[in-house]
Image 1 (cartoon, one colour):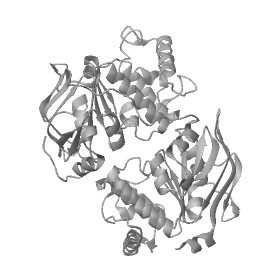
Image 2 (cartoon, rainbow, N blue to C red):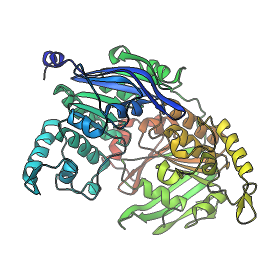
Image 3 (tube, rainbow, N blue to C red):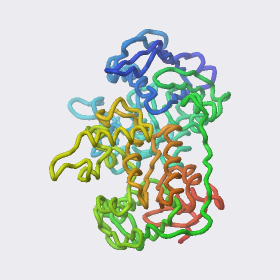
Image 4 (cartoon, helix red, strand yellow):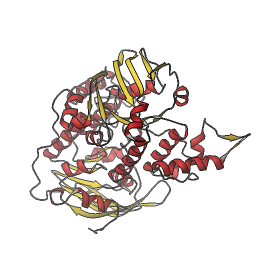
Length: 515
């Protein structure tokens, strides 16, 4: 579809005066938003700014407290996702809504069956998947089980599912949050193809550079209110960041480089481990983290980083090899023993490993220390006063935005959940910090905060193992950098002596250097 044809179709969606209230909270306060066919419209804002809530109203997951939605100029009431889908609106959620054990084809039609009598018309389903795959560059095997697919492939299935159901308006919620950098450009090629076909897309993101790259216009929300809408041709990262946060955001960090190797705090020798399917995932890894040092580990997701971190932290048994902490053997120690010895873990999955979501902020603040004084009374009791007082101190010191320490952790935004984890772990004054994807899904202010905390711990003498898919983060923070590929560490570089292209090549298995 060319520019003239797109302009003829005009406005796809208009949201006027949208208000969404929850008990004690106004998530959206009178927001206006327009979306045109043939447009990618970015939606930016800090965690908790109201972006996903606003789009959940458009998709029918929530009913607006006030306001009106128009589709192609006509007022509509969208009171469920089924109504939204019938109206041509699809949503690709940040956490995929797929059935892992079903095939790609079966996931296409769950709740939306294409049948021939009592049976699914599988031939027709496969044909349509193939047509859409070729049209938009979304290659995927219709007969593969979703649980066997990579994160990038599962995302393609989510998009195909929306297109299969006839979506002309697509809501993409943090679509690159779990994608390795090497897959983002291929994803953007798909987005451009859909835009050229006249699809109208909302692109929810925290990543300013990506918003400027792929979006035509950007709307910024702050604390539930609309700050403004700007064309990306006239915008800069600094401008958007200031609109999001309400102040200037510093993108460059100031820190001293390590002049020479310090004392080794964490030593890993010949470490091997298997994944949950008993397949080798980590093979003979050697690494050392010194005091006052950040050692970065880069890699495309699925190359053994998760298993390496878990084996080091006592969450997964090692098949062979040794872990030394401050000169003492700790291989096979429990996470509790590791923490007592001075190693803490910031997990990549904050919901699965970092928090008990139904517990209060106060209860989460003492996880791993609930048996210690002053929190424990005897062998069975606990001091609620001591726990609440400690939690309030952490909340204030780490600027956690929360109504009160009795609030359930699940009620917090992702950024504030991460602050609770950081507060709990860093307050132990650890010798070694193993941080896995510590800024995944965070906004610019959240990323800035995490970086400041890690650099402060480094200055105080801690050693940090930083595992991240974000090359910009690694190039900014790491003193040394290694790459993990197919369970092994390949190459060792200092960020000032290499570039992202070289590291990216190693991540994909090219020009592999053995350390």
